[in-house]
Length: 455
Image (cartoon, rainbow, N blue to C red; front, side, top):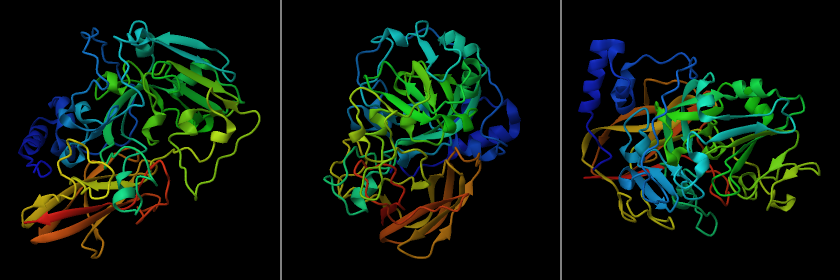
C-alpha cells in the first residue's frame, strides 16, 4: 500500500549531500526525508535575515474553483477543506502540493479580488495603540528586513476523528469535518517579523490586542491575539510572503498572510490586509463561535463593558476559551481505521471498517511527532496494550516549532493488532488517553490507536 514506501530515492539524495556537502541544490532538502536526516541540526529555529524571493509575474487566470490546489495529492473532506495524506508522508518538509488547506470560504484569488493583485495589495497598520499608522504595498514589504522559520502549521480540528473513533462520542456530540490526522504540515516560512512592524508603527504602553484581519476572505475573518503574546514572540510571528522558498500560492494566503508558529492555524490569518493594535479586548467570530473550546469542563473567558465586539458578535457568544497553543501529538504513517465517524472522505484509502494490511515479518514503522509549545522530548509506542517502548527520533530535531520523524522495529505476526503512539514534550507533558468533550472537536491530542491487519 502507499503508506509503506521504499526510500531508495531519499537515500540517494543523502549520499549526494555527503559527497558534495553544501553544494547540493536547495530543492533536495524539501523533497527528501533522508537528506534531512543527513544534515546537522540547526542551532536555532529562527534564522538570520533572508533575501526576499523575486515576485514573478501574475499567472494566467485559473478556472474558478473553490480550492485552487489539485486534489490528486490531498484528501477532499469538504468544499473548502483539504487534508494532507499523512499516511504517505516521508519528507521533513511538506511540499506545498501536499499541505492541508482550511478555508472558511472559497479561496479568494487575484482574478476575483483586485486587492490580492501584488502591485495593488496594501497592508494597513493602525489602531488606538499605534503612534505612527502606516500602510505599505507588496514591494515595500519585500524591502523590509525578513527572516525565515521552519514550523509546523496545524488546524485546530486535526484529530477530531478521535472523538468519534476512540472517545465514545457521536456526531450529535461533536461536529465538524473528518480531518483524521492530516491537517498538519511543515514549511519554511519567510516573513517580516512583527518586531519590525511594531518598531515602525510605535506601540503605545496601553496596547491590549493585536487584530489580524483579512478584509477579502468573507466579512468576518479576523483573529485577535493578546498584544503581550505577540510582543513576547515578535521575532517569530510575522507578515509572511513566501512558503518553502516561493511566493505564497492562493490556497495558502497569496500574496501575504500572517504566520503564528505553534498556535492553531486560524491564528495565521490568510490574505491579510490589516493589522490593528488596540487598547481593548476584541471579540470576533473566530474567538467566540468558532475555534474555541465549548464543553462542560471549559469556562467562558472574562469580558467587560469596555470590550469591543465586531458586528454580529455579542457578549452572549462568549462561552469558551480560544484555542491557542497546539498540544503534543503523534501519528504513524498508517491510515486510521474509520468505523464510527459520521463520514468517510471520498478519496480515503480505506473503506469504512476496512483495516490497512501489512505483510508479516520484520517491519520498520514510521511516524511524526510534534509539540510546538515546548518541543518534542521523547516518542513512545506500544503494541496490543503491552509496555510502552521508546521510539527512535530521526534527526533533525530543530526545536519546539518543528516536528520530528520517528521509527521503531516491529516483528509483525499474522493477525489483527493495535499500535499506539504518544509524544512527551520538554515540559514533561504527555499525550493522554482521552481529553474532555468539546463540541467543536478542537485540538484532540489523545493517544491515537492504529489498527493494522498483518497477513
